[in-house]
Image 1 (cartoon, rainbow, N blue to C red):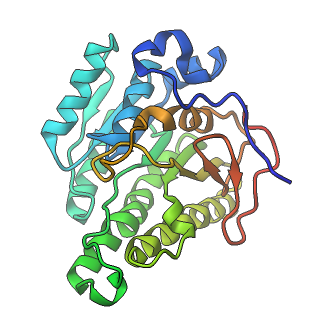
Image 2: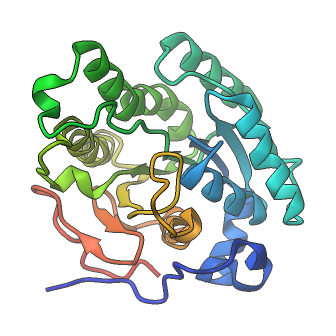
Length: 282
């Protein structure tokens, strides 16, 4: 059976956020306002759009990226859209550097009693274009790709989870790619990194739920599809197309999906032993 969530808005103009609230209900929109979220890769692309949307809802938002100027651009765009930025905090960090990540975690721990949501948006594209990428990629490039796309997400989640558990409820989203299901020649290294990220997101969900059964854990994987980002200049789709589904998952009340995979258009997907979520998420 095909499960899908209707009424997901993929083309809601971000400039009209106050009118459509990206398609989520008023109750859920306002519920986001008293929550704290950490968005990696929030200087560009999907991460920027998600950070802007959460700030529009009044949430406390921590924005992380390597380039401080890009994070400032995100704040500037918020202001242009009439969004208050007082509850937004720039937390620049190199997610491949354990010391830098620990510093960012310390900043967040001091700034809020518990972090409610974490969105992993930071990622690297494949460093070489070749039909024999797996045979030709250097070990250094392989390590950097896996470090950014997989290890950094593990490191960040592992370090911040104790702070998230204080609130007895948490929401984690790992932004993946269809490459995680693909075997396209020439894209092997990137395919492998996203397949590993899929497994990481679902494995985290089951581990936390198993060991902390009293916690309302909702850790899921979201495929944002293709859009115009720094990694993909050839698309005409606005990266804000991912926002509606992202907010739908982040705002879900207790008892929602944990360890499942979704697409930005509302489809409920499967990955390996991760079955399709069989309920509505609205």
